[in-house]
Length: 179
Image 1 (cartoon, one colour):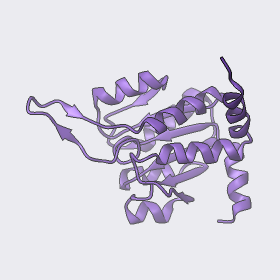
Image 2 (tube, one colour; image 1 turned 90 degrees about the horizontal axis):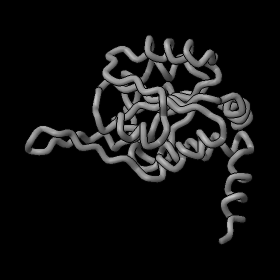
Image 3 (tube, rainbow, N blue to C red; image 1 turned 135 degrees about the vertical axis):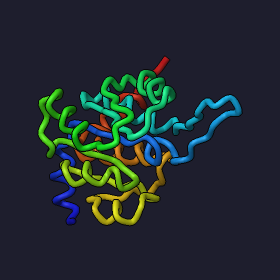
Image 4 (cartoon, one colour; image 1 turned 180 degrees about the horizontal axis):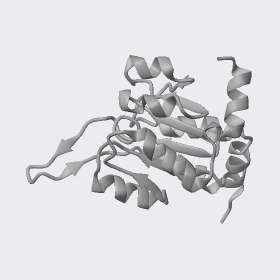
């Protein structure tokens, strides 16, 4: 893919759809002795998601697993559309697109493993994290430099906002803030 065609695709993106395990986290699942699940989320991914939404864009989560920690993190970040525990993610994406009245070419999907493949093949910009499985990396229009759970989401958000000329005005506004 040429950089000019990537720029054109980026300019159309309005919705960012994320997998959780392996994208927002490093993919490890930890259980405490009493059976509670622990997930770790990268703080810069969270900051990026807030800025994405502050720029008037939408974010959503579609995950094959269900976890209270995902619901809590989504609530903290103001992500209203969270679909968990879905074995087949493509129908979930269809429902999401219908609810938001948004065309697939306006959607960016980030994934890491084979269950994400149908989503990457049915959106405007399919992205694989650096440590995604080989089949997903091959199908992606872009592969991040960072691994899942290590700031890959923030990397993509910066790329999208820069491509839409929204990143620098935000940085300038924050830089200008004074006491």
